[in-house]
Length: 316
Image 1: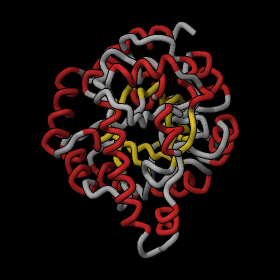
Image 2 (image 1 turned 90 degrees about the vertical axis):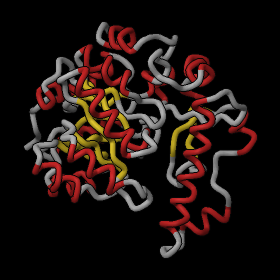
Image 3 (image 1 turned 180 degrees about the vertical axis):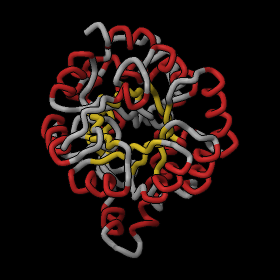
């Protein structure tokens, strides 16, 4: 029997929406503005270089708002910071943790002891059932319209399949750019949505002006998949630089990724190198533009504050 619980009830917020955690983009100011509006928001733990900075960010949000926010944690072996970051999230008792790219078993066990909810990114029913069995509080259904690391299944099919076979809430991720999209997804059975791309070009983001303007200038047809950045498929804007260098990993990287003994280390190397490239492009003017975004870029028409984006969102 599927869950009838909505995201706003699960997190005790006004609207069933999470401003999604976005690498290099999400920051405390964005989260606080979202919470003040009546939605939830999350940020990636990896947005902070040190554990001290991560702890300070959590404390800053808690001091500004009592509303529920989350932290995204990469739980696979390619994240050398995983253990230390998890310790901090547990110690600071963040309202919820979003797990990605690995088994959430340890996170769920430790978080639930502190009353912390755990939402798990999933791309298919098999994995959704596994995390449900481990005790996840909800799944975030990452579909083929998502920005960043996307899934392979269209939004309606994925929502329908997961809500039919899972008993925990299903939060959709991908292809949601306005209130009409959200309403449609919830009619399919989603408890709410995690939305990222349309918030990239917000005033509060500390990314470069060039990146924000690219969100306005490019459209859905310009979004492509690359495995050059993290070793897994990632959506980026097909800028002139990307067209020049190509979107595929090199032959030696693809070959080594097939080796079961070396895969972990090669993927870690590709990930760290790729994230450094994305960081340079996001934070400063550069011709080497690896800018992440999803197909919902089609609905970004101007740079404005988070509050303005949310006002537009819930007027639709």
